[in-house]
Length: 225
Image (cartoon, rainbow, N blue to C red; front, top):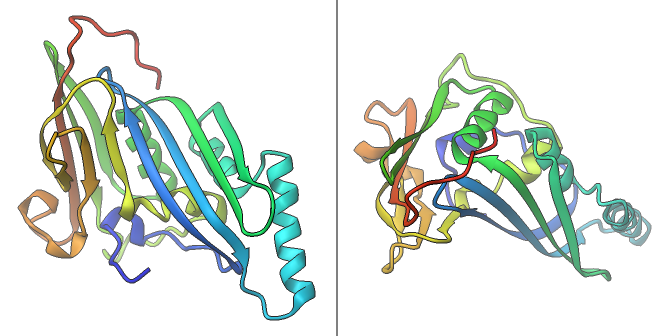
């Protein structure tokens, strides 16, 4: 992957394993702020040169899938999700898997990411009538005092957030910082952090993300944390 990772991602120490895959990460955001996070892994295969090593690595992954205990599922549970579901789309090599986690509000999810990655910052969701504002700030991991490594399970879900898409299910985004909005304002895609515009941190030591939307309903259910 040639692109530069956003500041909240570079801190991760990615797995040194030999499984190659293509990964997409999407947050499906309800207007009340709850999130369903779906990670799709396709063309999962080992790049080991020796046949026996390749088979061992792929068999280990297959067994983890059968137990619904592959790294992405474990990473979701490590973040605090209790409703984690795995659908195996292809059971032969190369594998294809979709893993979904539900039951967390976007502000709480941002806080969990900060806490588990060892970064300073904050994640808040402010409601003003039917208008919602999610703000996320994180200290740049290149700062000297932020050196916390990540385990492989968390890296499996946090390592691809440079490609994150946030899709709002029952509303439209009004504005966004740190994201590019689609023409219909239903999809927000994470920007490349190399631009370092004002929305993403004026001092090169932090990143700021912001999404604003208006809920259609006049009331919202309780948001789990």
